[in-house]
Length: 602
Image 1 (cartoon, rainbow, N blue to C red):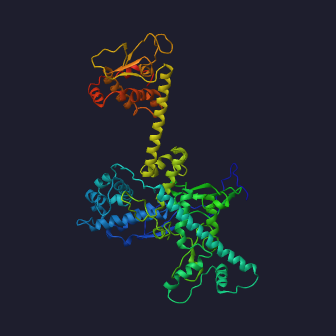
Image 2: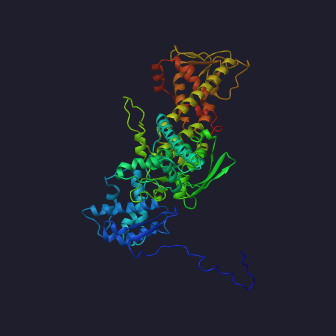
Image 3: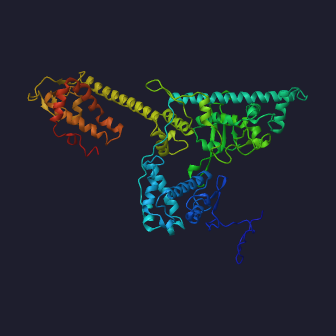
């Protein structure tokens, strides 16, 4: 191809007619039907005429065209369907009112509030905010906006709190283990079933003679044509027979549930992204595969990402993401050649209208990502149940791919010690925490155990440091005189919170004490604590506890941990609960700000 160049006095060459196509833009809607062409390759037709409120149809159709049309921001079929369903709910609700607005101009703030606060569905702050946002995006589009009262526009434009996002919780460890084990067992059975069918077919080919039995002829014909024969008699009677025949060589609809469940559990990816996986991939050195993954929630023009999955040894293909992908690729190879060669997924379905034809093979997720995988039926047939409650009762375990994904994210976070940047693979740290970890009871329990263990370790380290310093001073614990009266003077020089038996002779150096802080007195062999010191120590303890909310844990434990440990290990146990309560009631002003040089420790 020759590159066109410009020269002085020569106009730039124009492209060949038909190459350049101007960008799509909004246009008037001549009918009440809105066509949708999504960036995901799916199309749809939305007929506004079937909705309620006929006087609303024309402006709603134009607004809908701007929302889901070429210039709109809804670029997938599922999101466009969500918008249309919202419009249908809105018009259906308005029609049910006694004072129904005949046209957009009759809509009032009261109508809007009644719709947002209706009781036909559970109302939460997050739900109300989501519907208000969708309502705002719809009503502010022309020509609806030009018909609405200014008070309505101002009302829907008022900022609203988002509420608290309640993330879907994952499964418990026991539930998740049982679920994945059942899926892995079924996938292994599918692999064994199709492997036996293919080996049977290869044995027939190796004999160099035509099939001699009905079973051999059946599998030979299915492999050659892709058609599963239809026996005579009622349809219901032979449906199971045809499914068993097809299962010898092909993945059937009943196989989709365990395949998807195990795939999500092994890869940790959203089931929507796995349903759109392509058949095209690249094997990297027999150790990993590279495949292009679609993730719509990344935003426009950021749908595709290349992922690398480990293959692992052959006997681990049900445990590694790359090995499982290659297994699925192999299982659905025959069906894929008869349906959609570009997509990974292909299954055989027992249909009524295309019975006995190649059309029974299809990509189950081509038209919609919901597909026809009956997850609830598979979970029920496996006999899966929840963990027993306090009374030993269990309930059937529902299968939700979102909960499977959450369980994977929780376990990955635990495996890296709770370090969110390391655990966040397909999401940001913020999304990982807010959507997967924050509301999950398993994650909360693990976090509590981890924090408790960390606190125990920190306290043990602080106690060890305190005991080590005392040992250097020739003592094993502080001198605490719990039996003294409050008014009894202490022997030695008074400090901020304790007394010193001999400030002129440090237990280690033998010279005058050169302490850096009065907090160091709690680790000195000359320290003396009496009942008179208890109120000040109680105030100090409360102040140190408040500092914990102002400082990070490592800084707090370094600065105050040894003192906190000395008070709770050596001092408080020597006094009664009554003495401590009385001291708390008589607590004086704390001197910590003056004692630790706050200008050096901001």
